[in-house]
View 1 (cartoon, rainbow, N blue to C red):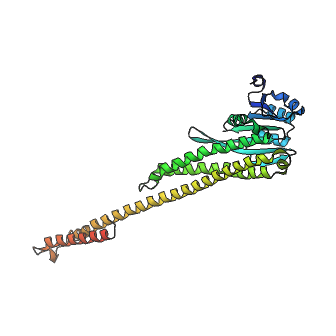
View 2: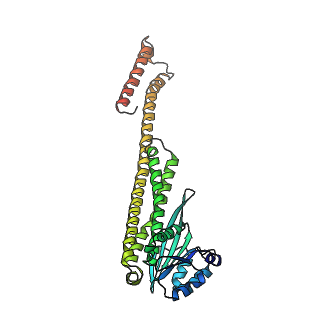
View 3: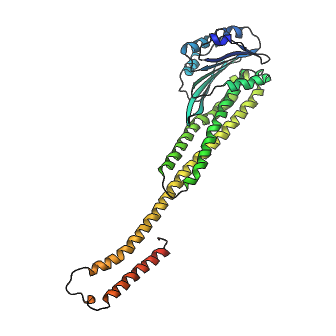
Length: 336
């Protein structure tokens, strides 16, 4: 590998290479792109940037003949997922995601697809696309299909990076299932369930629009006529299927989390209701003898039922009978 290109290119240029008609790689300085493209030799350029400086984007605008509006969008990392055609160049904006210290970090990737070049611009939370390039280089016959094949490799890697995040959240949900059906209220469980649902909602915002992006790329008249060969469409359809599956999984898990929150709160409410019933039953058992004894605790001078010798034992029997009757009643009603 020629390392000279890496010494002259700015630090934000992750790679700048040329793949010839047989898929062989040649590293290039950034300022020689236009000359290489002008030679007319078969092949294409693949340039990768990470949070580039404005000067680099302006240089690539001149080298590759990019539209100023598309370059302006690539400069700002707050674009909605979309596909736009500027002449014979397609501009794509997609959202990326990765796990960093247990938290999801989101980013954006902007891609320019031309007949003889592919430019990717990464912002924020985004893993390197070196594995996508290495995959293509291991199968050079795929690179002979043009830069659209490189775009497929990048999109496929983006979608593959969604899968571990979704799988981790699914495992977390399965771990929480035992605690979800607990009768006792635990605030940490509810907070964790909410965090999971929030994360999946943000994930859906990133994943769901990618379905439309891929569909538009495959339907684009510019792509059909010049940029994407029929052999590449098969691969893009495969990525589209993966996105559909991941999006369906996210929707299912969001529904499960919503149900889990409702079930947990319902179980806690029922458990609290059972506790209130038990407290009410015991309060009634205590209230009955209290009422009777308080009646006889009044200091009246003439209470005839106090005079007989059997009055006290009778009172005990009556109070005990009332308590036993109430206990059996509450037991039958399952309040105790």
